[in-house]
Image 1 (spheres, one colour):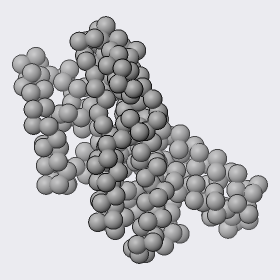
Image 2 (image 1 turned 60 degrees about the vertical axis):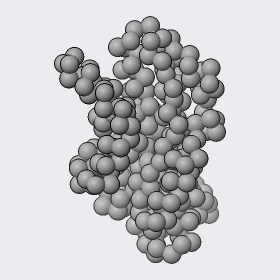
Image 3 (image 1 turned 90 degrees about the vertical axis):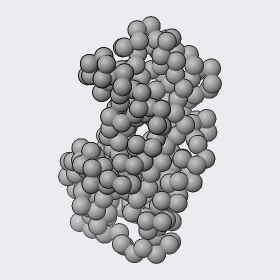
Image 4 (image 1 turned 135 degrees about the vertical axis):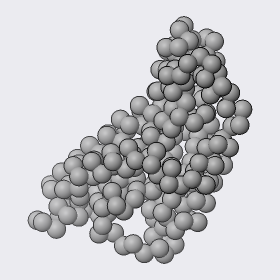
Length: 250
C-alpha cells in the first residue's frame, strides 16, 4: 500500500498528476524500498531460526540480505507492479518467498516459534524508524548544501516510501490470520483445543487473507489502524525537515 495522503502530507508539494510518467517515477523510488523491506523481513526470520537451532534456511542460502534468494517473481515484482499502475499509483502490495523453518529443530519449541515469528515484524518496525532518522538527516544536510536540494529531495521521497511500506509490512504481518506471523503469536494465547483448530486453518493457505483484503476492505483498514497512526506520528516529527521546505525558508 502506498503512503496515504491523510497521514503523509510530507510530499504535499509534489504534483498529484496521475500521468504515467509521475506514477513511474514514484514506483522507481518505492520498489527498491519494498524489496529491501521484504528481504530484511525474511532475513530476520532466517537468522533467528538459526540462532534457535534450526539450520533449514541456512542450508538453503536464505541467511543473507541478498534479495535474489528471497524474491518471488510474481509476489515480489509482478504483483506490486500491476497493482501500482492499475490503481494509478495509490496502492501496491507484495511479498517474498517465506523462509522455510523446521520448528522440531528449535532448542525450545515455544520460545523458538515466538521469537522467529516476531523477528520479521520487529525488523520492519525498526527499519521504519531508521528511515525516519535518515529523512531528518537528509533535511539537515540540505542546510549546508542547498544546491543538492533536488537529489536530497528524491532521497527523502524514497525514505517516505520506506517508512510507510515497512509499517505496513509490520502491522499487516501481525494480523492474526494463518499463515501470517501474527497467527503464530496469537496461537499461544488460546486454549489448547482452540489453538489446534486455529492452526488447522493454515490448510486454506492465503485464501482467508485474500478474502479479507479484497472483500472486507473496511475491516482491513481497521486492522491496519496502528500503521496509519504510527505513520501520522512519525510524519509529525519529520515533516519540518523536508528538503524543499527548508530550502524555501533560506
